[in-house]
Image (cartoon, helix red, strand yellow):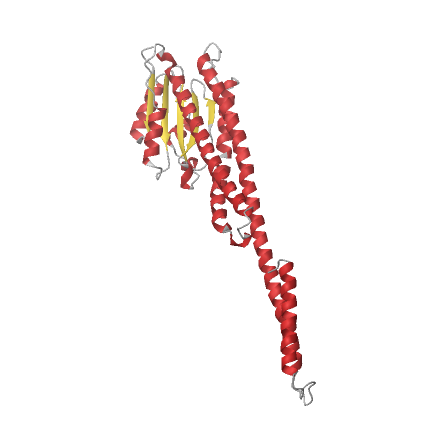
Length: 334
């Protein structure tokens, strides 16, 4: 079909987007894009860069959807690129939006990956192939991000276990504050992906289950927006999305384990500090009591004229302190 149109935009101006929408609406007969679709394509809700909600839904003569992919897992930010699209049998518009401070190289890379030249013998499949291409890129990115996070969580867990079980390492000497901060960043990244992963899976599931259709047409019929071959691709992507969901849940459990061990380590540190403080206070208490007792100002004091009273007192005080020190040392309070 010579009139097939595929328009792919990145951070378009209002004029560029309006021209693309007008061209797309020419393939929809008398129907016009719904305000919800225009709002999505225009990226009016900038919160979607931090809280994306992937979806694919029927709008009569066309399908509207949005998929999201993380900007960069190492930036300690929960931000996403959003790819909005409208597609029917004859045309497609895709619009890539990202946060203002997104890495430029990542934006260019993503733009090149979701762009596609359609020079095959079935150009009428191009609109649906565009969505398949975007979906595959998003799944690949989510898989890569989760793999990177898994490596980092495993490394944190390995280092923590190595320090905890190393006999030469004193538990109190382990710097848990730095590790706690690193674990917090990882936990934030993992939890922030939950909704994105879940809704991406749901979007693919709605396509595979036939819940997304074009129409009804004048004859009352409904037609799937994607070819059988494209449906097979979406089914494969759905399986991968389910795997990503399971991996993310496992990763969340692992980072919680790191958190629990860090909290246990901090609890041990505080307990040791309290025990040492109690031991030192106890060691000083009894000698201070004896010194205070014999330091009272009375006219008659026992052993006042005894030749060796000071030496005996010093030995008794030292002995009391030494016995307590040995006791607390064996109890590992010191």
